[in-house]
Length: 145
Length: 145
DNA sequence: TAAATAAAAGACTTTTAAGTCTTTTATTTA
DNA sequence: TAAATAAAAGACTTAAAAGTCTTTTATTTA
Image 1 (cartoon, helix red, strand yellow):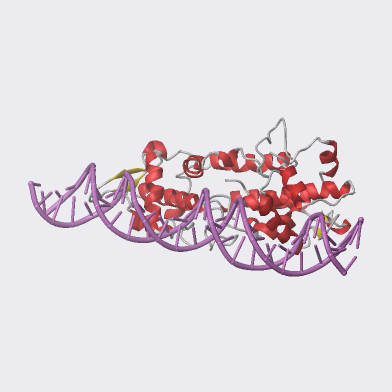
Image 2: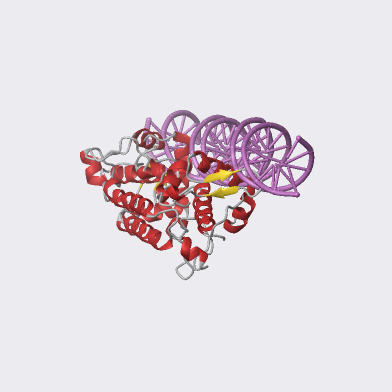
């Protein structure tokens, strides 16, 4: 039980890795990414397809091809990844799974959970894709199990 | 994508409902609970078995039997339900799914997510099973979709 | 322009979570 | 003590998430 799906966890790690490599001046392939973020290669391929379609990462086929992130995307927030993969419900859903639950008609846990949701939302919007590039390059942070 | 599993959502709602009914002086059966919290009856039965084994709810078989909560359990925290159903990982797991991630060797999101996790943990420990009984009885809160 | 490279696409399998059904056991009350 | 009631137990099915495999398409470079 994490906060995000496994797919989303891989997606976040992959994007961080691609951002780092782009920052270092390289494109990177599925094999390289998979081995550096510890993910199953073919599954990662699926995820990257989705991220490419959502415009979060860019790709070119062929020799010397691979994935990278264009300048405009560097500052995109983490929430874009989560939304592209897991959908936007995490930002709005009721902790107890009640569909009627809202500000006007709150469930017992609504007010407490509102703060938790707000904090996650705030964090995902505040954190950018390229935010950890330097620490990753310096080896101060790591993305593989 | 909620924070808890579906099973856990049903569990929390069921326990709140049983607590309310106990407070009103009644035992309550699977049928009654299911219709009041909008859950599939046989699935709820499974969940209640787990909760009974964990000692979170009590049950008696036979006519006039059903589920109730004993005095000692009224003050148990919500975290007991979540732990019994989803396990304790939500209190400790890494947001990016990295197994090494810890205070000593943090992943990029570790420090931000620590606060979120702490807040959920705090909330689940602070909130008791019987906390909403009165509002539920008065009809100010509701548990069914 | 042919060969090599690398992602895209889509069909497929496995695993886990969610949900159902049937039988058994315990308890109460007439 | 028999009939009715209600939970416990366990086998089973379905749906969704996670993961794999094969073929196609695009791009580069020799």
